[in-house]
Length: 563
Image (cartoon, rainbow, N blue to C red):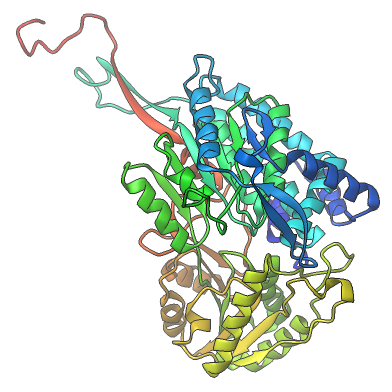
């Protein structure tokens, strides 16, 4: 399972918990088969046809050219070659998309006005389409070619997306239904009044998503927002937009009306002729009722600045520098420990916001753990994401490749010992953006490798003497997204977990997420606020309203003389 994406693993486990054993077993067989998805000539041809049909803006359930037919070049990280283009939306295109969503939300027979059960049926049809073998294989190939992750990881991600649509289809009717509120008993209370809490669709939502899990990160916003009755303008990263473009026609075919989901693409990094960027034009738009963003802290600050002027709700899922604390009583489980450590940093080529990129190991077992870790790391098969057996593909872009290499150069200059192996690639992949999985030891506490998010397959290792020291070092970071702890003592795990300052803590595992488990940064830290997954992920797109009703017509308090 360590060779499969964390999302794939969580899909399996969450379905095992949620549905019957028989249904779960069938699902496991189906998704395990996805690991065998291969880039055959037929699948590649189908993927190319979809890209050619959908690599434009999706507005009002139609694919349209950007203003002036502006495009961006799309480069595959597999070989560093451009292979298609992407529409580069202007400020005018963005305005069209937002106004389309606004018109849909405000319409008399609006998406928001439909019963939650009706919207849920649309989400279920989306899920069924994503599970169709031909569609699944096609999207896996598009995803892997666009962002560089292995086919096994892509198949896990796309399968998880289908489950997310089903999950929110299942829970939305219950959690969006009005709930009665308790009132004081007797006269002047529950004898005379009734109160309830109503969850209303929030409005038009701008969703800005990253390139590391292109479709999955988009779906974690789109599915709950659609379930809640919102109208959406989705802006994926220009580095990996193609599966998000394809999502438009899938949602429309499932029955979502025009304007319920619009997808716009474009820079940064390329600026618009009028200045700014496609993303900036979106977050500056006055008709947005909410912004939901996943990405870097610097970009998150821009989201807040744009929203502050309008006092607009904004949810942010930002970066992290998460720690994995391993105690010496885990010595008898070192194989499992090493496997979870590697899942925590080498999945998705280390390009994961919650990656447990700092390893804190008790000094008594450092030597044994490091020996096994370095041996296992040296065996990771790096190469073509389409090739059977590949465990790690390239990073997403040339820019990201350079940034990680620069981080390694600084680490060496700071005194870190760099453990890596040479990646051997065939000539046709020499232009790709591949990196060796790397472990850093002897890492100074104040070095950039220990303190800054690298967002690549780089693990920094330090030792500790005591539980108190481990907790202090783990918490000594501005981030607060995730942490992990490993010990055979469950009481110690619980005690340490309670003191780790992050939005999620994994005990004896790493990167395990379920659809039902809320995910987000600890408030007050630099990893953002708001949630994805679970019921909180749904309620991010609802606006609560309290309704209080006098139960008897004509009842009054007699305050001004009538009674």
